[in-house]
Image 1 (spheres, rainbow, N blue to C red):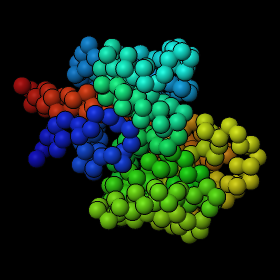
Image 2: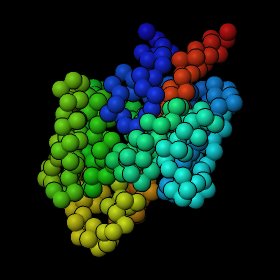
Image 3: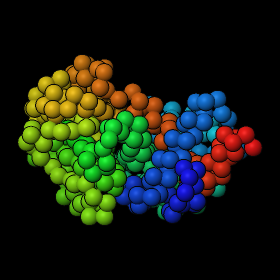
Length: 338
């Protein structure tokens, strides 16, 4: 089977709420589509796969990467995205999320939302008749997870198999950590959460990910031992306090994480791997969870990772828009000069 033939010609589920809802083959289909489309567009190709299709984007929080990547993705594929920022629609004022879902589902072809509570994205998916994509909740960040896997694939260590790759998430067990744990183990990699016990990844996510290990190989652990960093191919971190931690003072988080869990030059050297790459979902609190020297250093792939949010969103809207295979067929024909 060539790289232009997908295992899943159509999505197995209507909605993209959590990466844990999909098997390895379908996630790889999305990644494969995204990477082929990226190459085609960067080579000067044009696509109209989503011509006259509309994506409603509901934001309960501010957004840079999620908003821009989805909006640009839809435009590049011939469609349109509507930015429904906080306060711009009746949601949360005079209209329930269930009613909003039904209305938008009758006017638009897809819905993407970044929500405060995971229950909200589940309600949107339940009541909307069109595909709903999770742009981040307090539980998971699946669109980030797809971009992260694309970045890891782009910087795959030469000569290594999946079960030889080690990804270490450093710091707080954010929703990004949850999704990274699930995605890396689904790809058969070795995942470590290196963080303090009072901020460790939950047993629920360790259980979900260890089921992936049983099926696909690799490993999954939490540790507060710095030796767990040894041999890492990728070091990943996120902010220590963010959108969902407004009630927790910054000083508390600094006490829990600094200096042990700051990703600095010494921590990167402790991996023993001079080629270890650094990843961050951004935005970063510079010189808190990561130093400037690492974020801006030669081993940082954080900016590739940010760009790959766009790569990921193109794959997602094509897959859940039901036109991924048709798009790949068209690109193949163009490459063959047909």
